[in-house]
Length: 114
Length: 111
Image 1 (cartoon, each protein chain N blue to C red):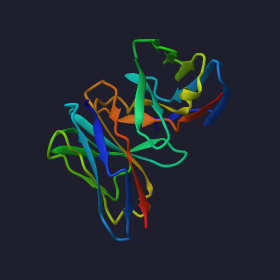
Image 2: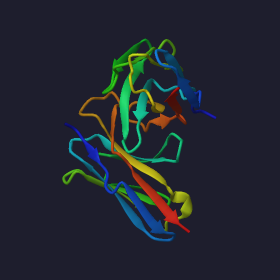
Image 3: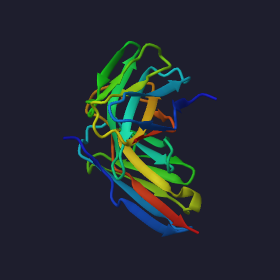
Image 4: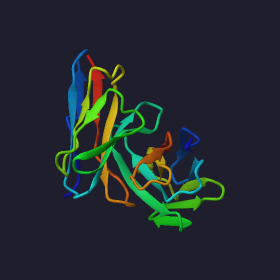
């Protein structure tokens, strides 16, 4: 069964710290991997999408990496700010289909303390 | 601005009642999706549609129904057969190999 796992479920850090969120997946034959942000009571906002041919993607203070051989992706947040507090979810396409179906991890809830 | 609109934001269902959640997009996306999110769990796919007048069951379709009569609209009906409907429902849309765009969700509770 294809699974996506995120550990830890929650993380609390002081403002200014650099941090890494982890995502593990069982299907290494993936098209891409996506990272999303979810604020409380809101929908998801796409942060980064890494294609299978890429090793990393960067957007501002965010850097996402992809290691297909080990089945892992990381989201690196530099110089964290209280506004970064949210739940971060990773997702990969379901199997080898082209339906757009995504398998989500359970998410990591990040709290950045001022 | 282009986006996805879900309504209502909050919805209450009485026992034995069917309720319909609205999802409209003006992004000209071909595909649309409905997810359910429970506390401590990731999103689970209920139904998806890749093209107008066609849709497929996701992982937890029992107790739900959908229609896709227009490209812009993908309403979800939570039927009385869904015995545990309390959850946060999210609608999304996309084009192939592009990130999915999400609405702000509908929170459904039982009266």
